[in-house]
Image (cartoon, rainbow, N blue to C red):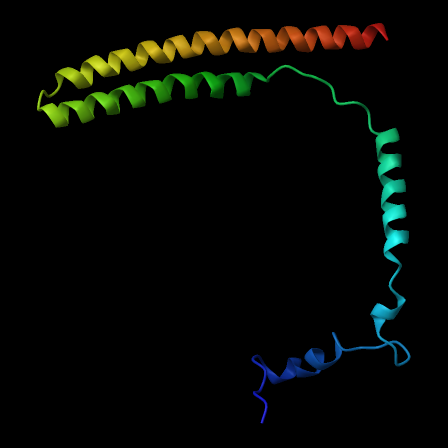
Length: 138
């Protein structure tokens, strides 16, 4: 005795017919295209997409990206510095001296990271402007 399928009885006819249908007594998979034909069709579609697609434009970062980058650089350094100081204070029992010292060091490292990131972003803006200028000359 086979187990009864799970679900309401009203759907039993759909379970029997939807996936087991045949066309004129034949399986649907007998009419499948050949793999070589599919591969050739895929190559033709890819070639058409390459012809129609414009080359990707190099753009500078948006103001939102810059703000998130600066906030992440500063906040992560401050949190890491504070956590290291807190851990060393807990280890040596010197509360809160090392927490304060490493918090200040973390803030200084964060400010340095923001300056480095701003130089990198300025370079990216300059590269995007140069690429746009070169594209206008074409």
